[in-house]
Length: 195
Image 1 (cartoon, rainbow, N blue to C red):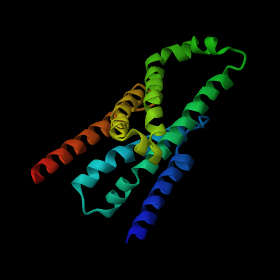
Image 2: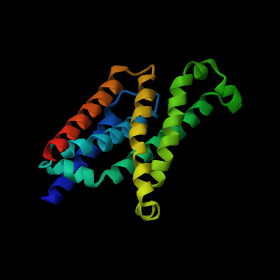
Image 3: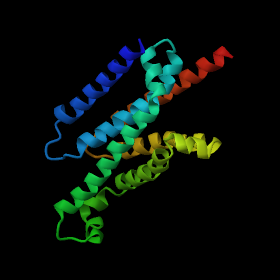
């Protein structure tokens, strides 16, 4: 049964990635599939724990919960690719300008808060990504759990970053975030009811 769940899980993930990379209408912007994939994996990482707590008999949620580390790695890898491509994209569209001139362009300065939350999200993601391995668990012990709880802060910063994205419908990140909060509240009360 575990093999079937494992295969179904990876097929679902690959289908979602296929939809993101091949079926999204991202015109000239080749960065879009990478940030969409990063957000997809962040949502999976964040939703799977409360879903597992709410529906303990669903093996798929149990399997994804046990493999959250790998989903988190995929999220971080897609996010890093997104960052690198976005920075290179700024430089590519303005080849004769220095980095200082690029930062002061009206296009960039109009998106100051959007870019600010992008940078904050990147700063929060780095320690999470660097400590998502067995060696860090052994070396950090109790501090490892505290570091991994930065994922909640990451969810907040990414939600704000996406909310400020002028090319996105602002209700989408808010809806994802509010549903996540509702799931956590329901899971919390379910766990309290057991005790």
